[in-house]
Image (cartoon, rainbow, N blue to C red; front, side, top):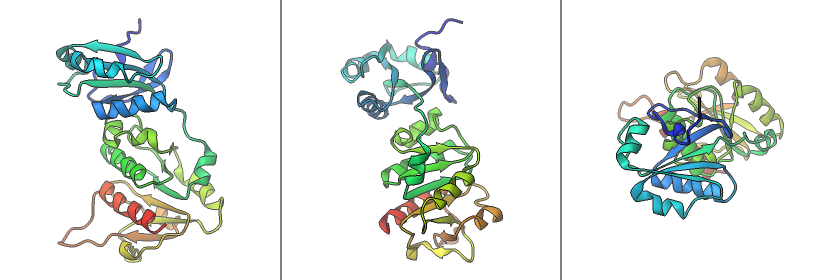
Length: 260
């Protein structure tokens, strides 16, 4: 089958990565703000932006922002909506090559690390990546879960997925053990509503700290909690039993940085 430059943009509603015959796995970013950020990363040489798909009204401004070698594809808004498979009103989309994973050495050097052994929802992953990048964490170590470069994760992360190092592995606990052994005094802290958990308002993380957050439905199990040095929890009020994992993660990451 002959590859067409428009192919990466077809049927995007539940899209993951797209395979490009020259650049391999690629991801899609959509919307003016996100695409402009991606193009800036492309011009700086941090990413390879393969193409930009623009509606006719948005094409002129996009052309001035293209990195060298990036193709501009232009279509009427109705045609772009038909191609994407849903009403597309954001004017711009872009296709970029999935970058290589960050090095193991960079992981071992991290001082503030978010660890996600398993998640199930791409929106939560995107929100956690956005918070981690915005709050200045050094990286995210993630296990199995939604696609890191899926359309939904990329969109919700608002570009954090290419701004912060993310290590995606099948068994993050093995790499986490290596991270902890790399420097004495490092600690692994579980986010868990247990009786033994420390009140997050009084939490003082170590100078080198990894925060571990469990999946949305069950949290961390007993075996995972046993791998952590201690636990921290956000006190609940008004009869609520817990926060969404992305909301809790943002609060705890702020505490990590504030007390760093």
